Length: 249
Image 1 (cartoon, helix red, strand yellow):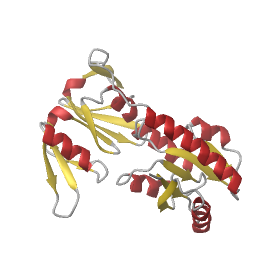
Image 2 (cartoon, one colour; image 1 turned 135 degrees about the vertical axis):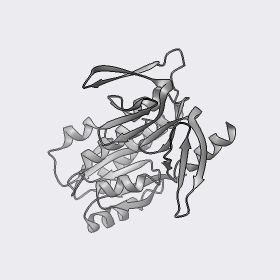
Image 3 (spheres, rainbow, N blue to C red; image 1 turned 120 degrees about the vertical axis):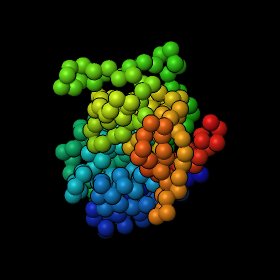
């Protein structure tokens, strides 16, 4: 089975050339292309990939910001690996600061690409051999802490209906309102994976609050939770898992 790959570059010719170079590597399948970081994040709301070949200098979100946004939203076991492809060599330290597998300078040489893909293959093999585990209930926190205008506020995890990531922040929506917290969605999923389920790249919902899943007339799906009037969007990527979970509840 080939590793799913997304090419992200604002220059069409650069994407075309990279796609041609990737044809020599049958273990990788280019399943999509995006011309900006924003478009890549939007595309990834509906699809999953194993690897991003990502330009750095782009309009809107640059490549470093795009990689950081993915790391914030996804757990380490589900976030795509990143190889930066750029015409500039002054972002190397920043690139490895967001855990990039490699950093290739344009024009990309075949040997350099082959080396980078070899590293990707090794990293993915290690990831697949490791089963992600959440903390046991005894190890999980009973409360989350947040710095608010009233000082340090504690939020009971049992009161949380869902977590929603928005750029650099995560909003905890709970019985008493909404509170911005310091934890990333990735950290929350790793700690509370048995209590919350991913329904969208940006959202985790409490399993014990799930009521019904509705298909919308205009397309798409929404999940409704106990104690919440407004439904939460379920992405196409996560819909099968949500359906399976609801059938088992």
